[in-house]
Image (cartoon, rainbow, N blue to C red; front, top):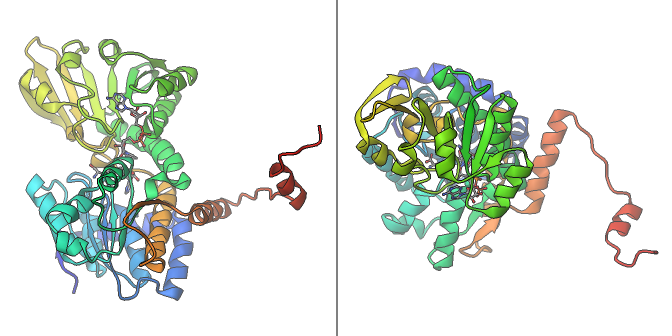
Length: 418
Ligand code: NAD
Ligand code: SAH
């Protein structure tokens, strides 16, 4: 019997339907699953997964289990766990510690349960499990063979740990693979953030002024889709090159205090804190909508907003209204947590197909190379990135050219005939 802490195990059949649906749209992961079933690369190993616990992640957990792993799983955000999916995984023999709307203490307890299952491999999303392994569970960390990190902020945290010489096991920066950030961060976030905003507010985007804070991979995707929906797009940045990129892409880069006066909808995607604070709220329009797509709920300073408000109340699922003392109202979506996951299903299956294929193959790489890796942050090996790209193309029925030997020689030659 697996161990589990889920809201209601009777929800399992509904969760199973969700997992079955997404698995039909994850062809790359399906090929890997078949290979894992034959080769059993994880037999005898424990894998701990801490990623948003919805259907696509559940399918990744099942693929690892099909490859012989004993899998434990917890959600990577207190608001993104889907209780029916969690129940379906527990029902399928996976150790699950997670429920929707966990308190901060419950969220931490769930991660500690995950760690107490003594994983050989950890798959983390944002760095919370790795942080606990380096602080409160160092005896478990000593036995971990390695791990994989899903997102930009988690990779930044790992690099800072590595720089201090404190990283206790090798980690693979899955986020930094081409088949991850080019598609997941850009097209995945671009689409799922709008899906989250639209289903939550049920308001039109066309004609609105949208302010995107941060023009990195996520911000670019969000801005691109905002334009497609007919919005005027303003970008705020701290990096001058990214600001020029936004300008050339047809957005309007400007200082955040100027943008604050103009925006109808504000979306943060920086990985930074205090992107919007009291000085911005002071000049925002009545009815402005705020939401976040970055890692933590610190991009929009909520304590500042609360301090300026005479009252706050929930006006719709995932929408809180803050009534400012001067009569203006400002709306916050999904408690300032990632709007696409806390108020939606996250990225589409076809996107997570690539991200999770990279996770599955990187986890296997860690086992195949255990002992030979240092306590460093590694990039995903090019063969794995290329394999995922080729499998994805195959699944799309797209054939591409190959270099002829003469072409290959030509592009590697410096001494061309002039
Ligand atoms: P990135 O590094 O490519 O981009 C971040 C951008 O924000 C950079 O261009 C940086 O200059 C800018 N920035 C930093 N501080 C700023 C500030 N105070 N004001 C304005 N701009 C600022 O990172 P990314 O891959 O786009 O990821 C952004 C965040 O989103 C990370 O926290 C990441 O973990 C998270 N993420 C979320 C999802 C999701 O599903 N919602 C998906 C992938 C990544
Ligand atoms: N602990 C963080 C997690 C960062 S979320 C938090 O505070 O919530 C950012 C990551 O979520 C992205 O890198 C992306 O790969 C992942 N993601 C997006 N949609 C997802 C989905 N449908 N299922 C699982 N993970 C998803």
